[in-house]
Every structure is written in C-alpha cells, then in structure tokens.
Length: 232
Image (cartoon, rainbow, N blue to C red):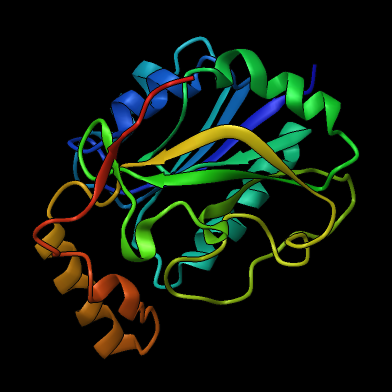
C-alpha cells in the first residue's frame, strides 16, 4: 500500500477543529509534516499529543507569513527529505469521511498512475448539516485538489499568492487526476461567520487579493438550505 504523508499548516486552531481532524487523519496517514504559522495558543501541543506514534516533522515558524504560498513552499522543503509517495494536503478544518480509514490507501494504489487526487467538498454549516443553496451546493465546482503523487527529483513550487492558495503545487492540476468518491467535510464556515467576513473584506481592501463576492453576498443568509450529512 502507498505511503501517505499529511501536509498541513496551522495557526491558532486549538478551539476550532484541529482535535477531531487529527483524530480522524491519524487513522490512515503514515507520517505528518506540519508547519505552525506563529500560533499563540496550544495548537502545537495538540499536534504533538494527538499524533504520538506517527512520524512527525513539526516546525514552528517564529513570525507570520505574508504570502500563504510561502507556507506551502516551506512545507515542501520539509517534506522532501522524508521520501514521500503520496502527499495529502488538508487544512485543519477539513475532515474526510470515516471510510477513508479503509478505502483511501486502496484507492491510491489502484490509481497510482495518476498525478493528483480530488475530493468532493461539502460545506458544513453546523456539525452535521451541509449547505446546498446558491454557490454552496453540490456542483462540479465542489471538487477540490487535496493530494498529489511525489516524483523524486521534480521541482515543486507555488507561485506568490496571499490567500486561498491551491493546496497542490503549480503544474499538476488538470493533468492525470483521480476523483475519489470519499467525501470531504469542510467545517471552516461554522464559527464566527461575521468576524470571518469582516476579516476577508479588510484583507482585500489592504492587499487587493482574495475577492470572493459569491461568498461575501451569501455567507450571512438567514435561512440557508441545509441537508444532513450521512456517513457512507
């Protein structure tokens, strides 16, 4: 079975979804490479505790990154010495459904000729329901790139970008990709919607990137359409 390396950066995730995310992902990864971006909470301690028994490369960066792409380039430099095979690129608020424990490695082995893997992302609006109306529904755009197969000697990099950077390196997207039927739950919108919207708008006004009007115009809808997420 292929070796799976988790690639992830974190920043003040302790009171969000870091714990359930790590409890889930430790069931099917072989190692983890994690970069902490100047957290002021106990995120680093949580990582060390919950990934005990799994090979872990963890670095704490002393100052915040301006460009998110720099985080990914730094993480890739950390990953290469571990001799990875498949690199799984998840955020601390993204959790694959439970069957990943049994099916992910098998799917990667069966699709080892592919260069990357996509999952269908569900935008969770509370702990058990996902949003389906407007731009949040189950559309083809719901497929996200969250892993790639490492080729020794190949140069991997992310072009400079401040926010919402693609999780896989430049030049891989759109090649031979595998669309997994394992679903991905994104919990990032559940907490502090008003605060998050304000931060996104301030970020755009200052840096002039990260403009997502479809999100800005619907995030605070009072009566969104929700469906129950049922594990398969």
